[in-house]
Length: 403
Image 1 (cartoon, rainbow, N blue to C red):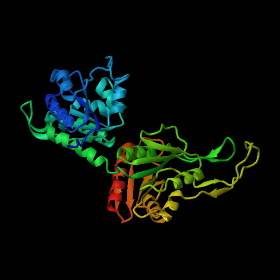
Image 2 (cartoon, rainbow, N blue to C red):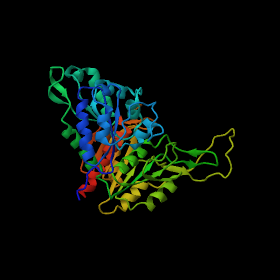
Image 3 (spheres, rainbow, N blue to C red):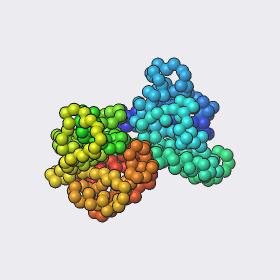
Image 4 (cartoon, one colour):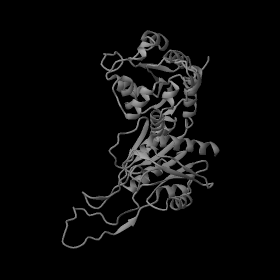
């Protein structure tokens, strides 16, 4: 019996109002034939080119069009579709939907779904050459790429407006193959266990105070989510954060560096460990049983060194295991990163300058350099932490494959 390569996959296909909308019918048919569950969302303009009935018959699913309609499958339709999707494909993607997505607008069912989903989003643009080449469109594409979206580049050729140039929707078979390739590559960590640490630690001074840092845990949580999407058994050891547990991730919550060390050691059989937590280097030598009262004099605290959790794993590194560290620095980034790479016996280290306003703690973006044991260095542009997490997990998969 033939195994369908996309069996069990849930794909949301957004169809917008371009002349190439008729090609989206063939894209849906091919994805359905590969075994995927395909859920079509049409904009009002798309229905001027192709009927809802056509997509309903091809997909075997009700077609979603209006946020305000009562639908039998969903309670809050745009949220349900956003959560259901493992991948969202917009085909054709007009200049208008690209602009709305880049601006974060949500004025219809498709744009609202795009804003709400955490799934990988693909855009297959199709438009007049002048619209494609317009600086506004190119700027919107750059924003979407920075946030982790993937763009299926339009082809060159004769367009519906009698012009010739770039802007033609690729053939449906090429689009379907692109989506198939994503899922086949996207499961590179199936059968692997990936352990991620995230957030800061809190080192108590007394019953109400602690020493901590500004880590929100966003990067580590994004890494755990990316590991789960890549098919891994994902385990997240998290310090205190305000973030919800990632989907399909086993979460172990801790407070102090010593608690995190014990939790990590208990899960150290992982194929890959990514140390994204901002673990406190020191803790108070004594913890007061009662709240410390202020007085007129100075307060002196004696601190003791916390264990270096990742260095401990590096000292007992198992054959074939991959260890990844983070270096959040404010100066001499390359020097400190390479020093930590060697000292902790890491496969690679992700370094960033946390003094920058748009990178590091408390913001959704990061700009990093990746240093490898063989001396290579990768400079990455500013990108959303979710997109960076996917890139890091790809590098982890590469390292595991090499070993």
